[in-house]
Image (cartoon, helix red, strand yellow):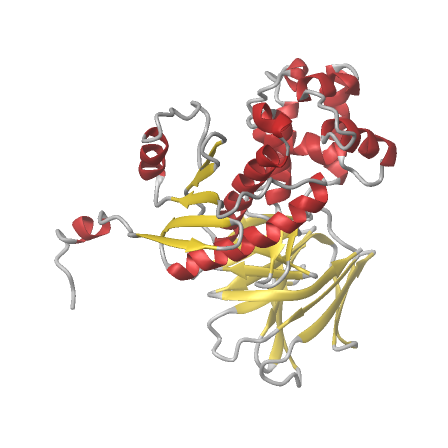
Length: 409
């Protein structure tokens, strides 16, 4: 039945009903479905175990007490819920807010499942950090806590295994790129790095990752001992950051660090999510999803499962350095399709049959060196082109697909 157009806005305005779900440590009140509440509870319990290991502490357990997490439908209901507690959120606060006195996280938003989980993990980190040690209660909105929350909310989740604080292959929000842009902006004042409430959350996150860098064990040890309070002392974040040197020098070090520790792929279109273990999910949203390597690899290995229904076509794209045009390798149910434009302007198209059975993954090995591109499928060379590649990327047309075992050098 087709609804009259005038009724649609009214129906869309009907708020979602709250559902409640309790786990061992959490009480969730969710404007959504019970399935959404259950998955959020599962993620929160797994995250709690990871946070215990990181902070070497955990909140005191009171019999029958649980941490509360409220997931609201939109910003208006989020603001209303917070204000109903007699609290006005800070002017710059959005999406996530934690009230220590009530031990309640309020959150809303997230266009994708990944983004919604990231917000959930952000709030859970604030909550855990505050409740794990009484001395942390006045650090809730410092660069230390907010940076840790952003850092740990970058995650992979395949429905079973949750990993926090990862460097994903790709992310719809390039927080590293935003941090670099903020640090290199003409109006940026390096002295802001020593202010307790840094306005740019992306800089807080990068600073945390810089301090936790495992390739610098002395710096990491100092931070975990003093910044995270492993020695039982309490060093205020503003005091700690002053131990890192002068602002100009630290700012320059952060910029250099970002250049070698940022996302591997830049998303151009569609939604992308790192599922862990080399798995990369892409949703074309009915059009095209595309992500480009920030630095073109000399060798790329991956696997794709051809979609028998043809509702989604995964592939690899190569930008011709000479013409700027695209060459594409599409993975179809019975063949690989290579298309492009030759130097003289003639179109090139070649279908290469493959014998991969339905539901199985086709393994690709792509080698690019000295103006030549060689394609291998299931360890057999299937194409060789004289092509100077300026950029390499992944794409999905139509629906969604997962690239498996993605690795490169």
